[in-house]
Amino acid sequence: KQEVTQIPAALSVPEGENLVLNCSFTDSAIYNLQWFRQDPGKGLTSLLLIQSSQREQTSGRLNASLDKSSGRSTLYIAASQPGDSATYLCAVRPNSGYALNFGKGTSLLVTP
Amino acid sequence: GAVVSQHPSWVICKSGTSVKIECRSLDFQATTMFWYRQFPKQSLMLMATSNEGSKATYEQGVEKDKFLINHASLTLSTLTVTSAHPEDSSFYICSARALDSRGDNEQFFGPGTRLTVL
Image: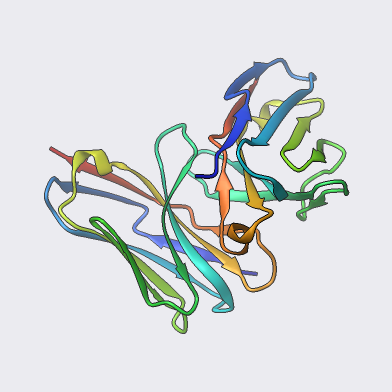
């Protein structure tokens, strides 16, 4: 059974810092990996999707990398802003099927 | 873009009543819809997978007689929580897999429904 772990569970940084969120998964037979943002009491916003054949994806200040063989992904946020405060979820889709396996998320607080 | 809506966005009900939650794909047809549940500070857990016109497939530990899923069309799936109890209080999120080529890669998520059972 696929287990997805996110470290740290919570993170507080001052505005302007660069930061890294980590995601690990136990079964490397994945189709793709996706990073989401979730604001309190809200649904999910897709940030980046990395196919299993890709190493990284970038969107603005966000960069996600994938090392499938070691079961790891990182989300790099450059020049953090208070508006980045949210919970960030990592989810993997297995080769078989379409349902996603989610981590518990990293709760990020960026202070002014 | 691909938009998925959920209704209601929040609901409060008394213990023992039934609650229906709708998930609609607004601008695309969805071959498959997924229902997830999220408890506070926890990850999203898949409850069931529903395909249009067929019975839903439930994950282990999810009672199919308690969580009734109907997927009557390519744009609508409903989740009915029957005889709700306080332990059913949670955030329910649906997602939809598009019938077109976008469905090969990703799902589109609804905004979620907050259920509180008193």
